[in-house]
Length: 350
Picture 1 (cartoon, helix red, strand yellow):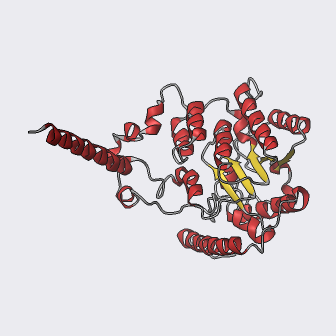
Picture 2 (cartoon, rainbow, N blue to C red; picture 1 turned 30 degrees about the horizontal axis):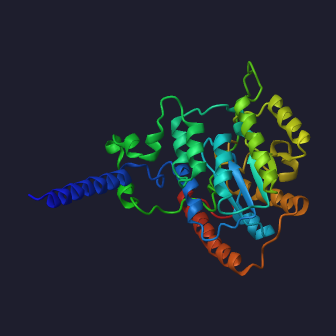
Picture 3 (tube, helix red, strand yellow; picture 1 turned 45 degrees about the vertical axis):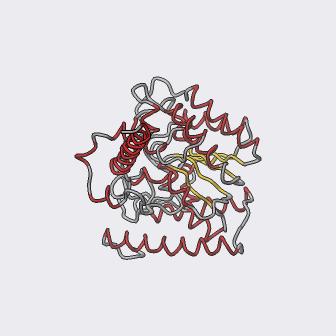
């Protein structure tokens, strides 16, 4: 056998191995479409036809389950997207902001402050749901390095098959169906639920030894603020009206002081119940942790008025391209709403 033929055989063999590993990786990585769909939210941003948003939300479930971009558009012409993920830590929010600025420069960024209570990552699973969906860039690399726990490895993010090689027993039909193209599971990052479970017996916060936010959390809040100042973007801090995890008065004072020091707008919706008209008997689907569609609609209508009248975000209705996109979004939004009503056996309006 000639050297040329040997070289060709080696190259072909390597290609077969690489292609096989690629298909195996696509099969084994979680698809986040039929069960824990929160892991798909970050990736969906890149599929947007027009990413020129004038408002970006950052944070955990307290943003992606409590605010509706469709309502913000319909009522106020605000073109928004929620870059949220489960237990999104503030360093992840910061690098997601860096990543987002590669595509658009919004007029304002809204950051939910609940994650300030964490100074380091708590669970690898939440890291994965926030980071795996990011497109590769310097922001993603930095986000991984900032998030990894001691037993995690950077190469496992580069080659997810190293992490999921033993996932054979968990495979289902969806892993095959969505190997290369997953279905949409959010509405501009919003996770819709229409069912209701009233807030009852909400646990009271247990006393803590130390209520101070950590040095790492403050560092990334400073970085977020400084990046927004550099890009002439208004940073708005919020605390969503979720009753649990408990938001301590000591937490509130730290954020109040920070907002005052740097002249930032801060809205604690836990304290604005009369204004938002949130009813925890009818407007939450899980006992007060997150809003259902009724609650998210009320909250979005109220906050949208603030964003429009006080912050002065541009009303983009009249832009032909955006009107077309949001008309399509609305059709999907209404279809998702109807599917949810059928799923939970609810009549619209009840």
